Length: 609
Image (tube, rainbow, N blue to C red; front, side, top):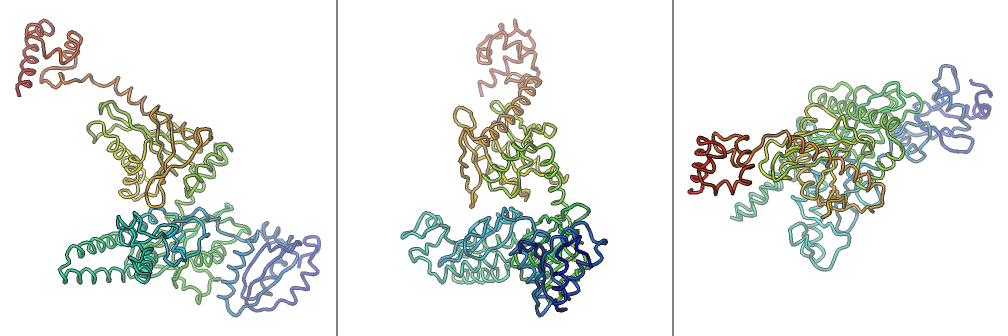
């Protein structure tokens, strides 16, 4: 037992230890102010609590710090180890004790919420202020967007904040059944919401069966057009299911968790929900280690929190190792997975490794190159665009050409708020003819991120296109739909005087909205700097290419006439039109009889066609 030189309250603590039972339960260490500083669970409360005050020299520095601050300990006896596990999770969430390992705040993660209303809505949200059933979190925005898109195409549901007295435009374009005016009954509307709830839970089977039965019934009644609409919905749902299925659909309802931790004060976890062979969602998080806990001890605390936070119904969890403190009655542990479950664990480990690299990279930038002023701007940009993480890496694209001649594009990268010129990229437009900015943007964005994807490169935290709504949709189609990447996209539009005018972003349902910024705002000037830099870089590359390029006019299309002859003719007569008006003798004087005949005959043959 320690003495009073270590903890002046040890005498009263010793008396309290004698009254603690040997039952399973939860204990709380309190400091002198009465604040809970640590919560733990134990199979034998007396033995576990007493262990803090014995063999003090063998304890880690962090546990020694905890012991010095303990003023009192209170315990709660429970019936089973499962009850202890659940109570510990509840108390940690309630008191946020200083010395407990906890997940980093996840308020920036997006959720989908089915609201608790007479006619429920489906909302995209990053908080829990609205009453309803939440699905998520979805740090993988691509999966969330795909879910939203497929649900909108499959079902009609209201999106208005307040139900009106007459059908709105959403009803007219087929996005809402207008329950506000009785055109859709409440029973039918709630049935639609229940199908949406099933999709969010990953339960596609019953919906597909119902749609197929509906299609056959319509076809039997010779209502072929309606049957075709249902058939398209079936195809849409099956296509999404096939894209999201990573293992055999016999893996019905499983959670997967992995962890990486070394001598650093942080640990990293990845948690995946699997339903019918599909990853319903997957997210990674950072944990601040408080008492030098082992990986098993961290997971024993974090797993119940994740299980509750994600409303998991799984009774099986796949783990990299067995956890003694997780009772089998609570979750069946699979610490030696085979086959498909092994693939899932490997996928989880790849995710958590990637997340750790991102966190370390961001932390190094934050502590190193990024000045406080730059960080403040990046935090403001993150808030303005509702980004899932601080945009430490920003990439911006711009096209440059003159009437389609020498088309090029430039890309600049800003790291920690500063130009990172080593990462600038130049692109020659290869597959676009004529002045087509949309096609050019599509080409360079696909080339850039397809290469990064294949090489495992660091994706940007934000992509900005130098252009308006059209350019944004082009980039979104390539990144989200074609490459299946999760990169937030914004746009910078210019006014008719070619000055930065507004910041654009995608809203909840894929439409583009304007982010209000004052021209005097430092964030506005930062974005203007990015736009000016990418424009300067692209136009400089275009000028260099143009000056180094081969002289070319319609004259050089004439077989046997090269750039020098064409230049001599233009210098002599001023334009191609004037050359066409010249007599053969005039052309002979300029370039000699052989080439003059070639030009003269070609021009008059073309004019006679």
